[in-house]
Length: 494
Figure 1 (cartoon, rainbow, N blue to C red):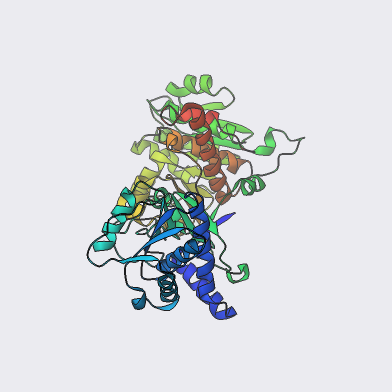
Figure 2 (figure 1 turned 60 degrees about the horizontal axis):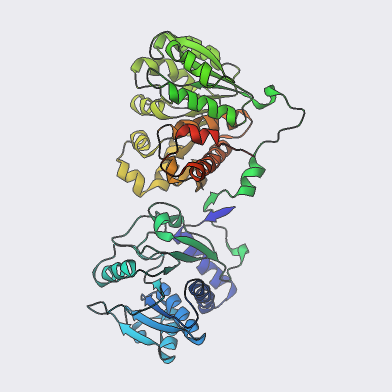
């Protein structure tokens, strides 16, 4: 299990460790520096020139220590400093003075950026996790030079200019080839745009003992974790052991949403699936998802208010519900599905059902997974989409708390919250940016709920295996040709 950490928790934990053990802080810096030098050797031939760009704080101290170690190993180092070594304080100042004593070629940047030397690698040690305001002035110019240099850039702990908590850019930011971070990854390494700026992420141990790390962080599934979380499937099992899903999806022109959701529920382990559908969509569902049952609840082009009693009847005895894909935003439809949303049955609520929920203030049962994208999330939280993008962790936790359910915020990096528990999913690819992809996810989560997973488990596993299916489809077809049906066909849960 990967467990990311916020910059604030990392700082507090590091201070507690140092104060409680007497471990020398400068030794942590030395370990960090050695990890950076190891990364340099992955890109630069022996004896190459490397440019080290060092700020004034501990991140700059790591850079100075790395430059010294690289020099001692026979490399060539040019160092750009934001302040002279004599003006730097603490362990960073000590390492800057040691570097100066080694005879490194140093340039203090006051009002202009020097000419870029010929080098094989640039080490970005300008700003670390302590950055709290937008980068501007000479620092912003230096970042532009690093990004335009055309050589690999190794960032120390975080790409400079990146908010380690939110993944947002503070004014200007380095686009790293590789980021070497310490002890645990930071949230901002995985949240966009930080995930794009981080490049390859290397997490290295710098000597902090695990017993001193009690920070909660955000959990990220790895393959073994996902496999262990899946409910067992005995060899003598029958279809009744794995639950019965009811999908409530589709309207005129949106039969595909019902097909994708229903098919994905079957692909994800549900023993039985029934689709509550309109009569115009019946033949489409029966022909494209022959392994599912179908029950007509409306003779017109959308589910109507008169369908309410029949839907409630269909929901009885079901293990899980999937509500929303392709339903449309007809007020009549919402009157029919509102009782389902508020039922105490494990369920997934998605798409048009979320928009209608936000409009009418319906409160889902506690055993519910909501799967909004940023726009739907903004409607549910009554805020701007930009607010969601800038502070996704805070909003997903708040909505999960307010509604007392599980919330999955869809995106290139997915956030999932229930109560105090928080998780991320990082599987997937750009090929999944296609209509219907979310309908597949809804069906997958419903299938996992029916098979016995909790809402949090089903949301995490659904997002994880949905992403793997997208990656598989991308490998087969390329990033531009993938459709949601291709993703559905690539579902493998094992």
